[in-house]
Length: 331
Image (cartoon, rainbow, N blue to C red; front, side, top):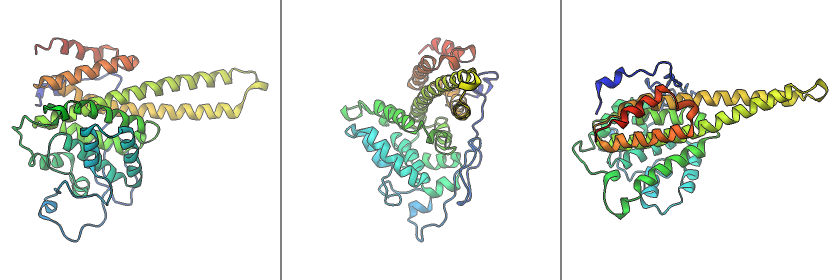
């Protein structure tokens, strides 16, 4: 459900100025990662000599493997069954991503697709050739828009902890990437761009699942941002203390080291601000008044986390006004 009036909401002057865009996402296979301001995908050189009917349409049976490596099915089953140690699952996925980042992002994307109960699969060809809107359109053809049954709302013992498992997976993913991949200009920018499109889908399963994942992703990033802010303040104080020492006791090398660390932390702050802004403006301000109560509840619950974890950024009029509006929710 997309309310046209949502487009009129303005966050001008807030802590987060919108920087994340989702323009055409195709790069030559020899190019490096694109700027975080322009979410793009590297193209894939070479193609299969023969294609199945499903592959010719850009879709692939779920049993197919990606370069012989673990597929999204492994991630999904680990969360669904609740029997695997998710920290180990995340570590394994990180190794796969470092070997082949496109295969890694595809695993994450197809994990979301499976969590939504969709039978479609995003292939390398689709990922490199199509824009997000076209990918989602093809996935929608594999889904019954009127279906009210999908993993997040399924009943039974095997589904009881599914939502908790998905949230734990997302939190551990961000924690595992907080020192490097969170700033790699490709992984989270690409992932968030597709999640934003899914969160605007007319298919309730896509909208609900992607909103839950995106809101938990935001909460985890907010937590990391609070840590980075604290580290930046501490580093700046240490640098100032060192500079205030007498000349004979002042360590120039130490000052340069602290200044370099501080500049790096400021860059991380900017990267995190861009990611948070993309989620807030791309998903939250549209879904906090979704027609589905469960989706609205997810937004309100996670907003509370942001206020608690990072009050310096969120405890202000520009963000608290949404809390006020949600408190007047009549459902």
